[in-house]
Image (cartoon, rainbow, N blue to C red; front, side):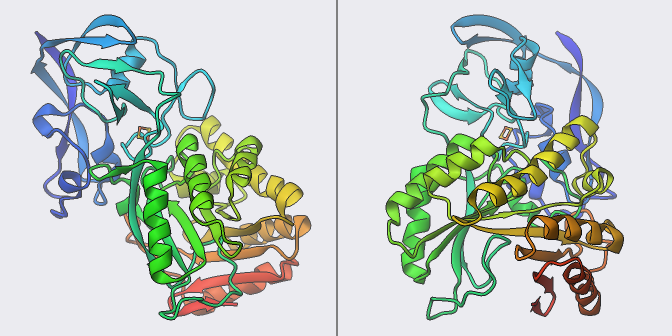
Length: 405
Ligand code: FES
């Protein structure tokens, strides 16, 4: 049967042949495009887009949660589930499949496919597939990359500590793929959109990172991203496993996050699991700035993420500031944030806790924002002065030449 559908294609005038869409993204190929949109979101040159096509398609029979359904091929499992009335949500809710990244990295949307866990948002349907959506009792997985030692920590690393490793390493870290933002300035986009890579259970990832900790002789163990919090079950078990494998008092378990879904009960769960250090990132104090940085288009959803991130900082200050280390990050570039807004942010944070560590990240040209200029050192000094003047005592500004403290 012939149907009208879409197919991702490349604009050859924009493509720079980086091959990210071929190598880093799990894709069945243009001819078999399942309209998942991963390549369109991930292409640093914005060279991928959908075109309307008419295709000869076959009908596939799928066994989903014990029922047989007949649907057209060239679709993702998630598309089919949505079509069949399964509830799907971009903000976590109990009765819905949570699909925050939709690019095959976080596996929050994972289902059992012929007995094997797979992300529903990018996995193509196949004739005869058996799909089970209740994965409550299944060990979670997600794509994790970049297990290595780092000389500089993240936002949630106390900046007054010295490296413990003889080689000058401060911590070991890994990066979780998948993010719910679409920042044109994304500073780690190659990890964010990576889906054609190894998925890890929390236990295996924790073992790997703990082994590297021994090798690099550091106290600090970190996860960043992408957005580390997207798959709640995975992250909670990962932190718990890290705690189990690193029971010594000096071990610090550190999560860097944009805090967009970090609700109070999630924070409680992470602290209980063994979290000791956290670095939430606040992308503006005005919703319009937040939406500009994140490139989120739906105002209600953006507002939820934005509000949750600010509330997370307040909740940690009110409930855990004497128990875990909290350091807040602010991305800065004059392209998206004014000095007035920085002042507003500083004043709000200083009112909550003047001694809170605030790290301002000088956003450089990356991903789709090659036109921006990395803020020069003198501008970052101005940023620091502005924030100090609001009453914040512990402001650190990142520059090309290191931190200004
Ligand atoms: S929503 Fe499917 S992998 Fe993240």
